[in-house]
Length: 254
Ligand SMILES: [Zn+2]
Image 1: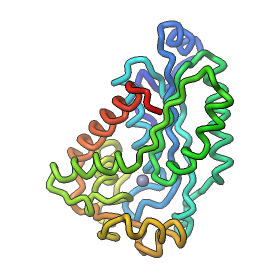
Image 2: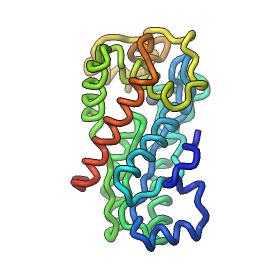
Image 3: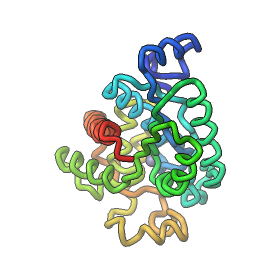
Image 4: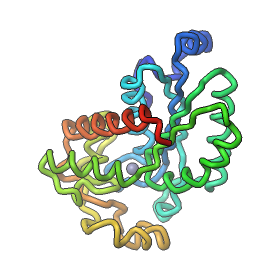
C-alpha cells in the first residue's frame, strides 16, 4: 500500500534523514486520516488509506518542503458498520491519535502540519477537534482540509471531462474511487464484481445515511457506478485533487 520509494515517505526514512530534511527546511508534515471500511465488492477495505497516501505524496511533490507521516489507517466509519471488515474509531479516539501525531512531530521540529482526510466521514470529527488541537499547539501552523464539498465539486468536473456523470463518479466506491485505485494498484480492484449503487443526488440522502447507515440507501454499499472506471481517469482525479490541496495549503486558509 505504501508508495514505493517516494522520497517524502517518512516511514521509509531513517531518523538522521529526518534530521537532515528538517535542517534543510522540510518542516511540513502531512497526516492523512484514512479509513478501513467497505467499498463495495470490487474495492479493498483500505481504499481511502491507499489513495490518501498517494495523494499526500503528490501534495508533498507540489509543496516541495513536506514529508508524509504514516497514514492513520482507520477512521470514523459508523455508517459502514453493517459491512464486515469495517473498523470504526470513536471520534475521541481519532482526536487522541491526531493529538499524539502532532505532539510528536512538533517536538522534532516540524512547524506546519497538514491534515488531510481521505474519507468523507472523517471531515466532521476533524472540524470538531481542530480548535482544541490548535489551542494546545499555538506555535504550530495546523492546516486542515475540511471542505468536503470542494473536493466533490472538483471530482465532478473531472468526471464530466472524462464522459462520466457526477452521479456515476459517485461519492463512495463509484467511478471516481475505482479509477483512482485502478491507477495506483490495479491488482487490488475486482472489476468483474463491480455493480451500480445509488445513483441519485447525495444531498437528500445524506442525513439518512448518517442516521441509519449506508444500507438504508444502497444495499451494496456503493454510491455511484464503477462501470466506466479507467486508470487514466484516476490519474486525472488525483492530479486535480493534489492541485486543489496544494493551493489550499499555500494560501494557509485553515
Ligand atoms: Zn472511499
